[in-house]
Amino acid sequence: MSLRKAPSITPARLAANRLNAQKSMGPRTARGKAHSRMNGLKGGGRSRFYQGLWRALLEAPPCSVDRTVRSVLPPELAAHPRFARVVDMFRQAEIEVVLEARMDRERQQGRSFTVGRPPNQKGGNGATTLLQSPRSREVNYHSKRR
Image 1 (cartoon, rainbow, N blue to C red):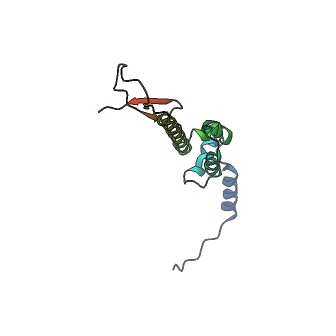
Image 2: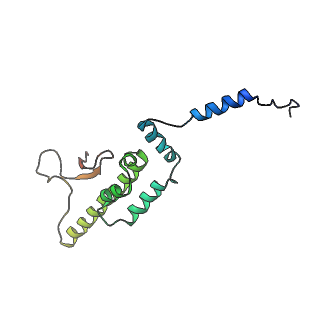
Image 3: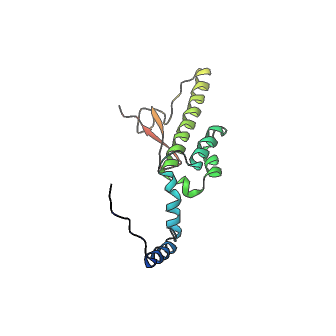
């Protein structure tokens, strides 16, 4: 514990502090404001937008991920990696549900089911997997290499 007396603030120092405080107004450009708006997303899932996105996607009807995201999120938030990961996960789940339903229908009708090119086309044995590209909205087909 220090026995030194705390220095008193002089009127000149107090005036300088007040002048500096008036200068500090946060970001001024549109880019700076957009960047500071994302600061609340650094920590995690407590953002009202993040929680609202999860709630909306869980309650959304089937095959409506993109429509739901457009209605819930502003475009600058939709491009943020944290939101993009959630949206991609829901898109992949949607694709898997559709494929599973299609496979069930085919099995009930007694037909075999393959995803992708037929075996007689150039470039593969016909067995392909369906993958979602994390940076695009289109579905990409990638052949299995054995």
